[in-house]
Length: 207
Image (cartoon, rainbow, N blue to C red; front, side, top):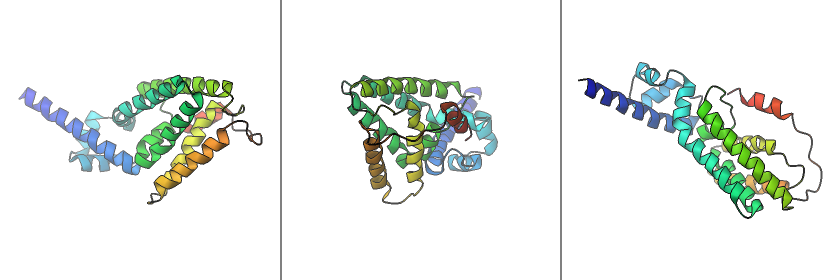
């Protein structure tokens, strides 16, 4: 009986993860937990027993996606052509909102209480900083581009994705084109000053 109960519990957990991935992709990570339970066909008590806090569920659902994000940043930073690596990475992150609204929110929200997610985020950011330095040294990226502009790019892409129209993919590609042209050296005019990085990241800590 104990083995059977454990098997049932694991099946319920996996069903909850699958359901949460679907619900978050469609409606974002702020979707009601009751919607996840309903999609998984489990009781809300069962869902909460497996994932006592929303952050626990978010961390479990997006662990692989965040690892892939960090891997993409590392691959871009190691590209022999740093401008190509920069373009590929910006294109990758700006297309995320088109396919997974939840993960787009994860990328633009800080989770101080979820060490695993934040470790991968920091790993990705370090590689992005390295990529930015290489692209500038190659003379391809404008000198006043800041690695801290990446969240702004992500938020811009997420804004386009909110339209949920058939033209979304085309609009996203056009946005990527605009952003890359704006980031390319030499830049026709200086960029306006942005917010202090600390203030920006404090704002991102508010889901």
